[in-house]
Amino acid sequence: MANLGIGIIGCGNISTSYLRLAPLFKGLEVRSVADMNMATAQARGAEFGVKAESVDDLLANNDVDVVINLTIPDAHYGVTKRILEAGKHAYSEKPLVLTLAEGVELRDLAASKGLAVGCAPDTFLGGTHQQARALIDEGKLGTITTGCAAIQGHGPESWHPSPEFFYLPGAGPIMDMGPYYIANLINLLGPVRRVGALTSAATPTRVIGSGDRAGQEIAVKTPSNIQALLEFHSGATISFSASWDVWHHKRNHFELYGTEGTLYVPDPNFFGGPLEIAGRDGVLTQVAPWDHPFGVVNQKGHRGEDQANYRTAGMADMVLAVTEGRDARCSLERTLHGVDVMTAALKSGETGEFITLTTTCTRPAALGPDQARALLR
Image (cartoon, rainbow, N blue to C red; front, side, top):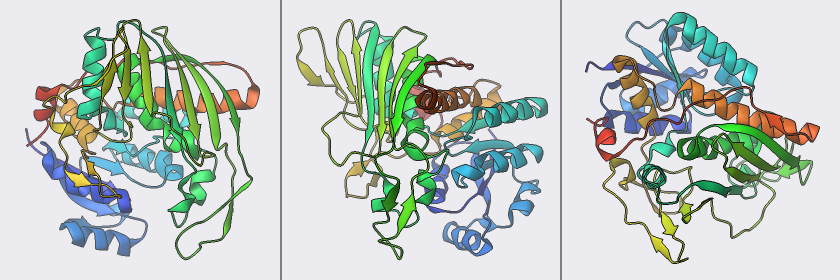
């Protein structure tokens, strides 16, 4: 297949992952980068040998077919809208938008122009999460009836030098980290029917813990603790805890309970990790990793731990889906449903009522080892 020209808007830290990993995948050729700060774009372009230009020039560049939106969350809607208006396919970092209405507008705009929109996270395409999907599809757990998922910690202000945006409306633990969990739940269980939640914030302010502004207080303007209950169309009920009000815990990231056993799934923020299963006999065993290319360790984490990182896999799948005329796994439909789930949890916290969702979606097609290898060069 011929390469599609890729442009990137937003040259912050996350752009290095896309620029480093894009060459692994078929059909992708990064041809331009842009940023509101031209010096930032020029520095990133020089680092990776890619042309740097203004946002306006990138959107007018005929060599660019698809634009990756790596701006801050509050700008995602506006920038993606400009990408579509320029006649280009769009792929956004999470979250796609901050409100369901914005997502519906982008969906309608993309449809009117015959353009594709995709959105991270794509970590559910990782080797471990796809192996979990295969075990469920093979009936190893029987029928999934319930489970739990948990984002637990004390927020990013301890390490991020400018963490204000994490505590603004449209952010918080559920909008910032929730997309990884919701995307994987949709991958494993399908769409959600209704959501109920309790929300709170432990403190009205937070203290920056690193950088030049260490010691400064910032305001908390969105819930930092969300305890939600998700009812799926499949009949499964999942408790979902998203909290930055926790100093220490011993909870697993992800547990699914079926009529035939229990599955322990690792952190959906990453492509790999250990997968464990227990049957009716209650004996816990580690699942031997299968030969999936998106589970292969290819970098070190912040603490020196081995990691598998294949961010851009969802982008590569979307590009191939465009050429093949099929549904992309990180599709707008599923992303919009994820936004509906997360904003419904926040709304339920305000109203005290269960919220029946107005969107739905299909499960994404599974991505087995051979299908994953087909995305690679």
